[in-house]
Length: 141
Image (cartoon, rainbow, N blue to C red):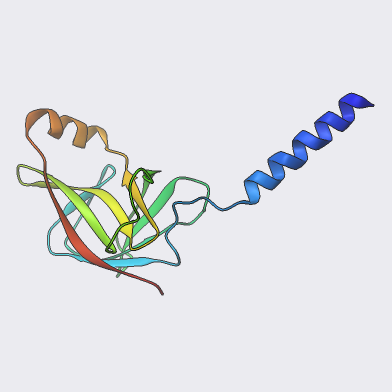
């Protein structure tokens, strides 16, 4: 009987903790315009207008999708709450030579999400130094 109570309490705690939303979230969606082609994860995306959404609050995935819905990719991210909340809503890129890689998504006053580097980005980082730059983004529907 005591074992059953312990298991019940443990399962209740797990259910409660899983109901608490993750700290790093994109509220609704974020939009940005990329004037250049870039890699997001392993996919090369053309220049254009994009939206960033988080399909599942607890999955650690972001969906990057072109406005015309012809191009989309899921990317893994890690919440970055090591510093103060971002002052601007923006997307940041790492540039190696002439190749751009999506590096971070930041939501003003809320959170920052570090996109995990793909193998291609890791190889590019070995060959050249990174130039970091950002584009302004808009949060909301």
